[in-house]
Each structure stands twice: as C-alpha cells, then as structure tokens.
Length: 168
Image (cartoon, rainbow, N blue to C red; front, side):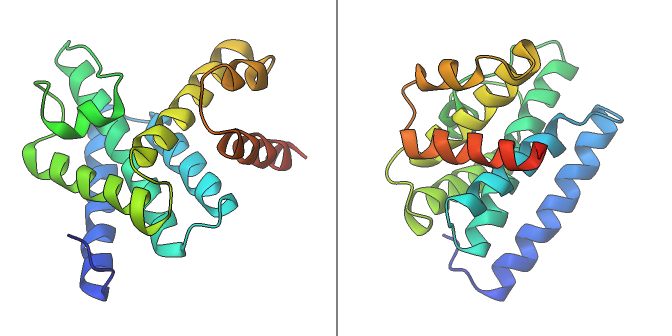
C-alpha cells in the first residue's frame, strides 16, 4: 500500500517519468496520455483532492493511456473497462508491476481522495468518456451525453466547469 511518505512520492514521480518515456516511444508526439493526465489533474483539483491524490490520479490516467497504446502497438483490443486494465483479467497491455501500481492508485482515489468504492474507476471512466465525446462532438452536446452516462452529477459539473474555465 502507498502510505503517502516521501519515498512513495519519489517512486511515483519516477514511475511517471518512465511511463511518459515509454508512451513517447510507442506513440511519438501522441498527446492522448498527456491530455488524459492533464484533465485528470484539473478535475481532481476542482474536486478538492489532496495534492498528493491529484498527482496520483493524473498518474492513473497516464497508466490507462499507456495500456491502450501498448495494446494498439501489437494490434490488440483496447480494454474499455478501467478496472479491467488494472485487474490483470485481460491479456496484453501493462505488465504485472504497472497493473499493481494502477490498483494502488485506484485505491488511493477511492479512499484517500474520498471518491468511494469503485469511484476511482468511475471518475477515470468519466474523464475518458469526456475526452472521447469532446473529440467526436467538438464540445457540442457533451454535457447532455455525460449526464446520460450515470456518473455522479458533482463530478460532471466539476469537469464541465473546469473546461469552461479553461476556454475563457
């Protein structure tokens, strides 16, 4: 488990650098992981997560994006279910060590940041869906489509408010 000490934070910072380097090797110039991590970070701040959990949630987004990049590189199917990426139930993608790190980061989001059981995966799924809808709909109808997703209204409102503040 991650206890929040300085050693954990140094380890997570190092993991973040390695993940970014690996993703750059797989998808040079690809902005998906960076965009996902950026939106995760901004949403976590807007939801008043502790700073440590903000960084961890952003790293969780990077890990999810890396899993997809690794699967695409070998012609595999991208795992849509966030929890499935980190459970080890599906083949391909992240190695066991990175999957375990992802599970620890999910737990941090659920308990330390207060998203509740299943909330880490649900919150990340909301960000992923938001980015997908935004790219397909150019920002139009995104609020309506997210509202129909079943995610917590507080999360949707925070995400949309942050994006509106970013545009202004």
